[in-house]
Amino acid sequence: MPACFLCPDRASLAAERNPARHAVPLFDPAAFRIPPGAVHVCAGGETPVLRTQAAALERHAEDKSIGPASRPRLDDEADRLRARLAAFWSVGAEEIGLVSSVAEGMSILVESLDWKPGDNVVLAGDEYPSVVAPLALRRGVALRFADMMDPAAVAAAVDARTRMIAVSAVSMVDGRRHDLPALRGVADGAGAMLVVDFTQASGWLPIEAAVTDFAFSACYKWMLGITGIAVAYWNRARQPAWAPATAGWYSVVMAGRPDYAQPLALRPDARRFTRGNPCHAGVYAMHAAMDVLEAYPRGAVQRHVQGLTVALLDRLAAAGIASTTPHDAARHGANVCIAHERAAAIVEAMASRGVLAWNGRGRVRFSFHGYNDMAELDRIMDALRASL
Image (cartoon, rainbow, N blue to C red; front, side):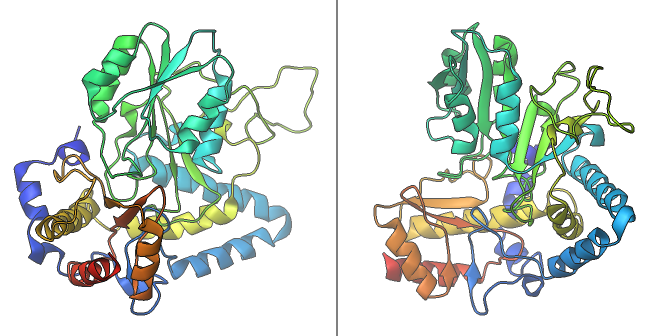
């Protein structure tokens, strides 16, 4: 697995700590609808919209309006996007499907499994609800919680009845980055699936999705897309017999008028995740996003954003402001988090000073992307000190 995925080499870490390397943005900020004069550091919540997405949505409107020729054109765009996403995640196009959200993808997966009384899943105690809720509402499934940063603790929590280890590649609470190969080893030892939410990683971190059995990601954060469309990955080598428990017209093979007296056949690839029409408007918006993300060498966005996260963590430490994010660049993502009981008020006060951070779950979260640069750290620190 490439060093940049989980454990950057020393040269990479040295580059991340080089301020000159991050003195200018990687992306052109003018390409985004960032409010004038604002420092936008809330990619972990919502990224600003690309200006090219207006033209992409206009193209969608034109293609949708041409009558019988519209549907083939819309579906061709969806398949083209699946191929681009597959390359982005280092997997085959037949393994990529489109869903409306991570919650929908997880629900389809959870509903498809033949759960038995006593089966259990292992998760982090602060895992995102879209991962936990489909499991928590499944009758008869026991939830077990472990520190996902400690593979030994996860190994101690699994047993012969563990069906799944479910984890976010990067925690949305504190920015911790999990060791997926180590968790893969624990899952294999227990005969369990490894299911990963890449939402807080995909778009800045090079993804090697084949380490998982199933994986999902929202597209409206670092992927630079919009809501209503998400990525679903099915590892067909690890789970060749998988089939959803429910279907729709899009997820089954249709050839002319259906004969419901005959068994319905599911699509042979990951399009079986998509029960109805995919979000075609989201597809077009994602093509504009992929135009940006694909323009940089693999690992370039990671090096840029982690140069900024490490520099901000250094400044917070020098100012005596505690962060819950691990300082080691090999163990954190593109977020820097500060736990505080007045988080909402602090974020609001910072916004009044033109620094757009994110609030929620009792923490202030700064999330960097390619449109940020080192010069913005002065404004972030000034606004944070004033707001604290």
